[in-house]
Image (cartoon, rainbow, N blue to C red):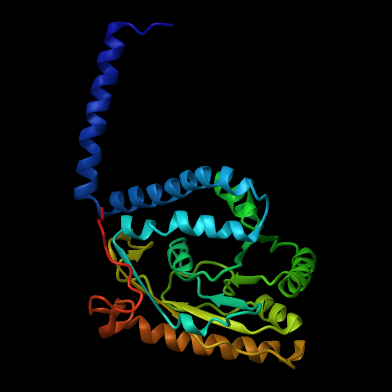
Length: 291
């Protein structure tokens, strides 16, 4: 069906209006800029996943595919003008399985994770992510472990299988023990699944702390600018000889140490206080361009 000439005029006017409104909203409305940036962030990740899927599919479901996803995601921080500094990477055990536990603030955690992700390490994620379009398929191909948190029996079964996989296939896993994103600038109480997993497998726990994003990102205030983030890898916590009865104290001890470091490196909302203000810090990912 052909459009009558007046319809083309209306479409052209709407297009011109849109081209005028978008820049106006971008420069005049911080909330609009926040939504534009988050929409692009999520859309870009979905697009990158589309590119990654055929490459990862060559191997099939394999933890080595996580290297491909990491390579494709490392540049995203530059698009947003976010500097990521990694400290303590030497604390990763060189040649054994372990469980990484990290604080969870927002979907931007992906940037810090990709910056420090060790080899043969995959996250444990909620099962809903599996249905997140191309991103879910890419994660599945990369060996991400999905659990249904609503079905406790299934989650326990998966964790038992993961414990065996850790030992037999030399795999590391990354867990967010808070269980959900926390935007309040602190840490929620830790769920104990990751610690039961480490004790069951008798492998060390490697705590990783990402500094507060409050300097450049706040969901409540609809604010998303450029900024800095420090990722601190803490010394591994051994679990040899521990039993399930020791898990509550273990979880509390690890959370306390992580919370202490979180407060230290989030001083003044600068992602690490005075030492992060110096250019050229250790492992710093420099700003290339921003929008």
